[in-house]
Length: 173
Image (tube, rainbow, N blue to C red; front, top):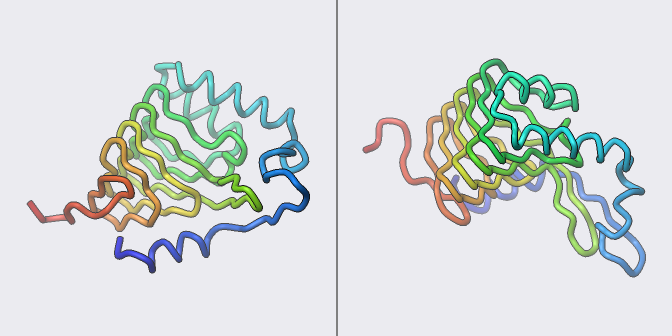
């Protein structure tokens, strides 16, 4: 995470959808996403938030279009994007911590943005962390609890804070 360049790359990987009219971009969300599909995805996410079964979570998340690797562990209360779950890829043996949130969309006043989120193999997203659209978390990377990930996280790197910044790299003590 080197600053403006990484943030610019994240924004380059997001699609901007301009909204017209007097309301904000969330106002008529049902014209963007099928309400029945969103309701089903929300129900799946809600069930997975309270289920202790990691196998069930992986199966259900795959069923709503997420690319979830083998051995991925989803903590209780963790929340993947309910509008665009198909934009999430989580590599093998990654850990998504308690109450972590992975967002693939941002509804803003005049526009909304969507972007893929990729979490690499053996990466860890700490409890309460939020990952924004377009972010790539590298293989073996670690995101500290309660961090806001606004930029890519290089492989084997630890980030922490709001916004998350590098605290150490592989081999650093």
